[in-house]
Length: 258
Ligand SMILES: [Zn+2]
Image (tube, rainbow, N blue to C red):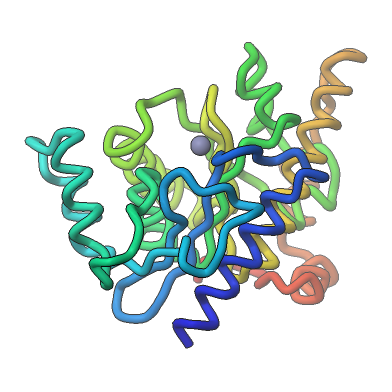
């Protein structure tokens, strides 16, 4: 089971890091997979996603990482030592500092696989005055099928502990407002997180987010984006044939995070 999860995380890493996608270059991005007994596999720090090997995926315990979020006195040094101490095998490599955010996505949002990338098309908007437009409304039916009706946008925050704390707070508020967890978290001036039940879903979400960003950029260049009405978007999000399409795509329908 755990070796399969590590292999799935590695395959997803190779897919997200494929240069043809232009989602991550060099050591950008990372992937995690939730594992039994409150643990996860996370990419080691400084490793390229496309050329990562099995040994570059570190098995860590979530408990000490999540405990950091409530430790007001924790500094960079504490974070570094806790991440090293969270490794199940103490000869494994250093986990990515984004392990904190991955742990939040798994613990708070119930994600099974998480993919973090910096797609050029998405970052073009996230690094502009139009970042908010990414979450201003649904543009086309397939976008809603894959990305859900609502996504989360997080203002720029120092990666690591500060970002982990803010995302945890915003994920809780998002659930209270929408009754489900987002499939996409956009980080202003940084990149995106795709939250899935399967590795394949993470890859599909990233693919659709990149396409949506290109369409949005085109719409902004031509004029103003025209959103589907909330009623139409809601209908796509819940109609039976769209739920079947989600099942066919390997995603769960209805309430995605239930
Ligand atoms: Zn990043």
